[in-house]
Image (cartoon, rainbow, N blue to C red; front, side, top):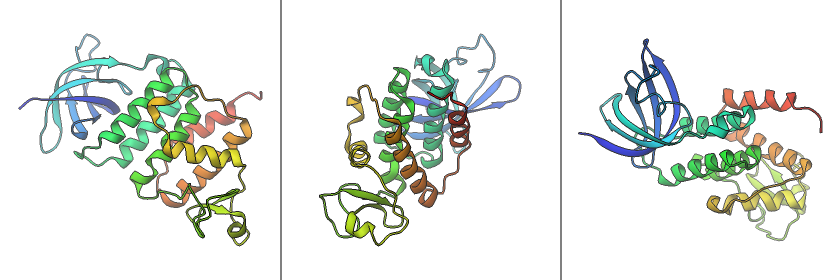
Amino acid sequence: MLNQAEGIVIRTTDYGETNKIITLFTREYGKIGLMARGAKKPRSKLAGAAQPLTYGHYLFTKGKGLGNLYQADPENPFKFIKSDIYKMAYASYIVDLVDKMAAQDVRNPYLFELVLEILRDIDDGVHPQVLSFIFEVKILPLLGIDPELDRCARCGDERGPFQFSVSAGGFLCSRCASRDERAISIAPATAKLLRLFKHLDVRRIGRINLKEQTILEIKKVLDAYYDAYSGLHLKTKAFIEQLETMKPEP
C-alpha cells in the first residue's frame, strides 16, 4: 500500500553504490526510515528529494523495518541555508535534535510545524542562533523538562526581577535566588525574552535583533539547562561552538 506524506529529510546514509537510506520526519507518520533506491545517481528522480534538509511530498510504502521511497516532489530545498555555513550549522543542529527526540512512527504535528517554520525563517534570513534558542525553549516540554519561566519556581512570585536556577528548574525571584549560590544572573530583558520564546507563535516571528550580552545570557541559561537535564550531547552542537570561536571580532 502506497502512503503519501509531507516530510523533511533530517538524515541520510549512503547504502551501496547507488542507494540512500533517508530518515524522513513527516506530518502524517512521524519519523520514518526509507530506502531511496538509485538516489545517488545524478539523473535519479529521487536525487534532489533525498538530500538532507529538503521539504517536500513523498510517496512510499512502509514496512516493519525500512520502507521504500517511490516518488517525491521536493517543494523547498532550503537553498539559502545550504549556501551559508552558519545557517547550515544551526539548521543541522535543529534537525539533529528532532532526530534524537522523535520516536519512530509516532505522529507529532506540532513538532513538524515548528521545525518547518524555523527552517523557513532561517532560509529567509532571520538570525539562525536566535531561532535555535526559540526552538530549544519550545521543545523543552516535549522533552519532559519544561522550566518555570512565568514566575519564581520556588515561591510563585510573578513580579521579578528574576535569576535562573538550573537546580530549581526555572526563574527565581531575588529573595529565593539569594539562597541559591549557583543561580545565573540575567538581565530583565533576558528573562522577558525567555518567557516570550516559550509562548511565541513561530508563524509570527519577524526580524530579530538582540544585543550581544543578551545572546550570551540566553545561551548560558539554555546550555546549562540542557547539559543538566536533556542527556543530549550532539556533534552538531559542538560544531556550532567551533564556528562561533572562529567568528571575527566585531
